[in-house]
Length: 95
Image (cartoon, rainbow, N blue to C red; front, side, top):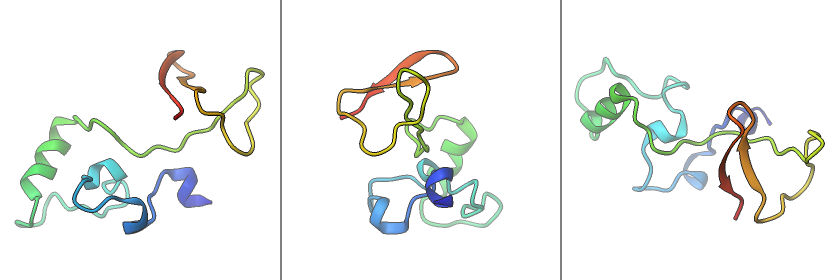
């Protein structure tokens, strides 16, 4: 439950191999990436992306609420909107 609430992926079963950047899966917050260590494969890309602060997608925990503000239990209906409650902007529809 902790892992899901914090948006932490379950290793290679949830992280596509060869398609994902460690930054997209919150590895910095887990101290799984070193920016002080010497060279490693992909180090330049990871460091550049981290310092530019441009991460186009990221794994985040979501909480789904109904129109009354109560948390939805069970499945979410496809076509439901994902809304940022702070800005009140629609981010995406659930597919």
